[in-house]
Length: 251
Image (cartoon, rainbow, N blue to C red; front, side, top):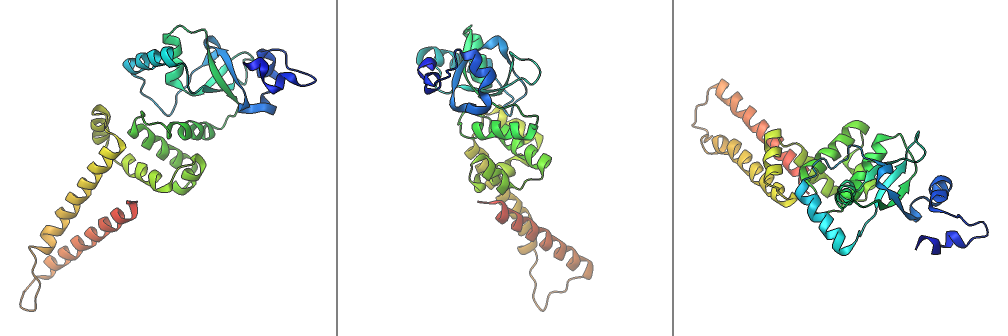
């Protein structure tokens, strides 16, 4: 119970949850989990963009049966005293609304206007979940990279992930929109997409190598015209660029 926390046994105890949220956020930050009325929470665009009604219903049923395992994360609204802005936990928030719950367990963060910081917070939490859309995570990583100029190694360190994993998401983000739509529609996992990319890389190498190395047999007795030789040199250079890129991108 919140009232049994050490904060409430100090010489000048905080008397209510309301007092805590208004006066003690700076000092205690996310050390306290409190119930916040759903009506006081304002949702905003998140890293995760797709919220399927079926998934919300399934999550709601799971919460009803087992309870909420992880609280949502919010921050105080900078202008409206009794309002909060949802940072992390969009599905859980919607599941509680589906269940007509009056409030939801929440962790409160300090207000910040830094959109990149908020996106990193969301990304850090979402990267540790297995039910998220791989394409959305890949796009979110590249959005942060483009906005900040951070290297993939910087981003990996900030969100506590292995840099090789972030490089894999970077490769995934470079798929065409058509390819991304296909993988979203088919609910491809990260491993599914990496297998697809490996196959695509292999086909690309084959496309360049076969006409270059099989159809052209160079020997002292072969007469090749200069334009043809220049063309073959260009093909070889293109092949080397692609091969080097594949080696660099692979973990």
